[in-house]
Image 1 (cartoon, rainbow, N blue to C red):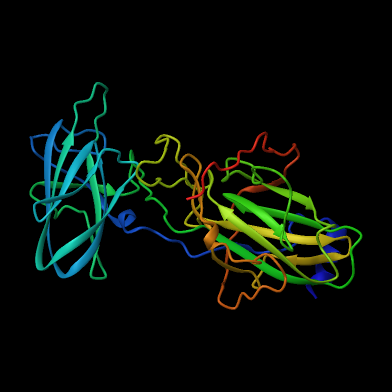
Image 2 (cartoon, rainbow, N blue to C red):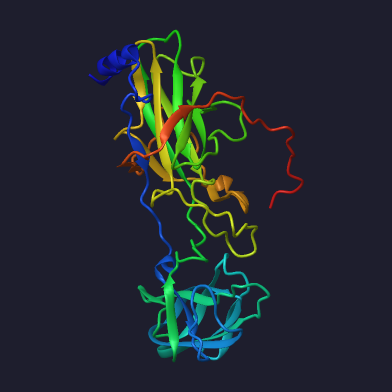
Length: 367
């Protein structure tokens, strides 16, 4: 039925260029620190705010019980801090935009204490914010920074508050999607129309679609989102086929990178509205739709373990399932992609040439 309806829609040139294909995403992953609050200690008559705090030292303390073993602490500080667990230093932060994450070994069975010695440097401008934020994960519980972390501690607001607008480093692998589909006979022409936010690479029957370095055009995503058409006639075949899509991050959502990686603190937009990845596609010919983003699309964690517009990309080839973008691949243990609402932005076609690689380099050493 969908092919007949889509064929009619194509002939009528309706407003939706994707002929009713669904917008798909995956469950959002929010780090514990994104639920914590920025805090600072009132050490003078001046109450600290998100705009200003007196230069000097601040101390925070959080007592907690543990069954022993291990825990995880993620924290950041503006300007800098040293963190102690039971009077032993466990980590430092000197860059609030890149939270520090440490594994806590040897927690005591019973009472434990986190202590933070933080510093706000003197400023030369009109603003001098100071803040500390932390999330401790232990025994299946989250202990988040708030006004209870010491004496005279002021809660400055959630992780997302200005001027920090903290989004934790996303350490989960980027997703890969697949959908199998059948073609009754060889089409005279087949087209893939696709949006993949923030960035994407598409594959048909194991072959990469296009030769661009960046497929998804950058834009002001809340106003306009561009889609691309690819001629995939030579890639499809009568019988079983499959499309695979690998998604990564871009300016759609810029999270904080892992500690030590590049970042540009004043250019970290988030247009995602909680949908870190967004996919929509349709494969069609003159007669109708051959396949689209729908309830048959599945996904799993892929080989890209870091995708960041400033911090670069980490690719772990060991994580890439062999043949995942081919028709006969067994995807029984993959999850179904989630259908989500449409963005409010206007959809427009890309009308300019691809951005293609100019030069490629081979690795000098494999680790």
